[in-house]
Length: 156
Image (tube, rainbow, N blue to C red; front, side):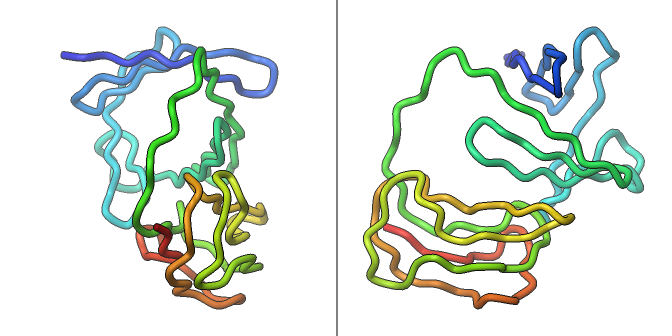
């Protein structure tokens, strides 16, 4: 069984997160918990269907909403991954409202450019271009309520 280890910073503390191929996750030396990613983008922690979370990310930052609280985590990276070509669509990481659309079809964008700004749980979440490319379609309007996994922008 393969195991991935990540260092995660939460405020001023660092934690060691171990993730097994079977979906079991443990933080520091705590007992492992099985994490299930559901089709609607929510994450179920353990086997209790009432314990769910939503995760939003931008670069090395992650915001985790669980039990009425939002936690800001930073993933410590030892080395930067090489950029890869990206073709496809971008979607919301969690249920959100479209605040601002910054691009239109046909526009060329650079890697990391902010394409859309979403609002979820009173946080602004930028959706950024994963690589340089051309916007081929925008599937939402400002003010729309969008769901995870639903295409917002197509880029090639």
